[in-house]
Each structure stands twice: as structure tokens, then as C-alpha cells.
Image 1: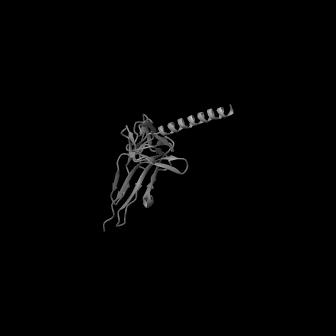
Image 2: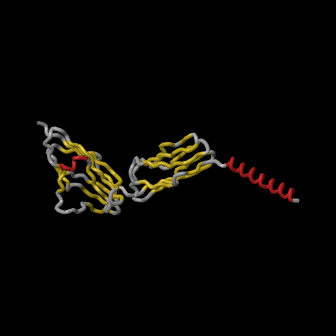
Image 3: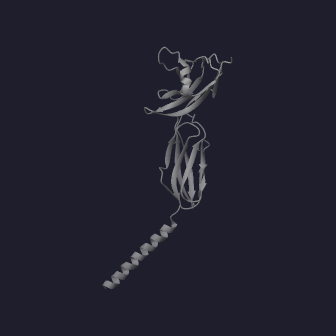
Length: 225
């Protein structure tokens, strides 16, 4: 009797192991190692990556114009899905995209959220003569409290803030702020070498971090002797 019970239990265990083996053979698709969602800012050319394991050759597809899959396929195994924003989000609302990741006929999705904060200058470049002058550059943004202006390099040494007190030169039009940098005077360039630099409109993240939302390239002629 004991021998028969042992035989029955042995058969049951063998059956369970056989079924488990069959199920394991059928397991396919994608296993995500990274979190399947990410939040990006309202800038173009911001990238993000998702680490995953694919049981076979895989492909990835984005179905929205503002998000590009820069690495869209692979042979399988441990791999990385790379995405990049191609547009700023000027809609005034947060938007979402689902990237479809397919391996062995199994579909997995990852979500990319693009925040709605934006700020942009009215031009890409600013050119001034050697005599200098006021910047007269306008910008628009839908965030005010955290909006910051940065200047790179030694260019900051040749800027004069004409404001008598620290006030924000911005007015609100519906859900958007429109402002101007005409309180900044560029000092004369008495050198024989032209000046150049970059201005950044950025959103503050905490006390020490910021995300660049738009860039203005500055050029000032040299004094020709």
C-alpha cells in the first residue's frame, strides 16, 4: 500500500514538473527591468531609456509625432529601448504616449509623459553692434514662479541690469506669460574680438537644479580699429 502511494505521488510530482516545463517553454515576450513609465519635460531632443529582456527579436513603435523611438529593434536578450522627444509641448496640457514593444508576438507597452511647462524666446539668435544696447528680446511661457534666466561664460560680465529693483517683466495673457528682457543692457565691445554666448530660459527644479527649455545664441561685433 505504501509503495503504491509512493508511486502515485511520484506520478503526480512528475506530471506537475512536466506541466511546469511546458509552461516555461511557452513563456515569451518582454520582461521590463526599468519602470515602464517616465516623465519628460517640454523640450525637444530629451531622451530616455528602458532596460528590458526580450525572449526573441523585438520591435518598438511610437504612434505620436512628438516622440521618436531612436532604437526600434533588436535580436533579443537583455536590451535597451531608447526614445526621444522631437517637439516642445505647447498645448498647455500634459500629454502621454504609449510605446508598443513586441517580442514573440507578445505586446508590452511603456508610457512616456511630457509635461506642459514651456518657455521660448521669440528668436534663435541676437546680434548687436560693437556699441552694444538693450536686448529687446521677448519670450513667452506658461510658468512664471520657477522660470529662470541663465547666461553662460564671461558674457555675464558685459551685461547691465537696468532695473532699480528685482521685478518680473511679464504680463499674463490667458494661460500664458509674455515677457521681455529689455531691462538688460549689453555694454560696448571695445575689443577687436567679437563676443558670443548663450542665454537659457529654464525651469527650476529644487534649489540647485534646472531644466533648459529654450536657448538664445548671442553675438556682438568687435570694434574694428
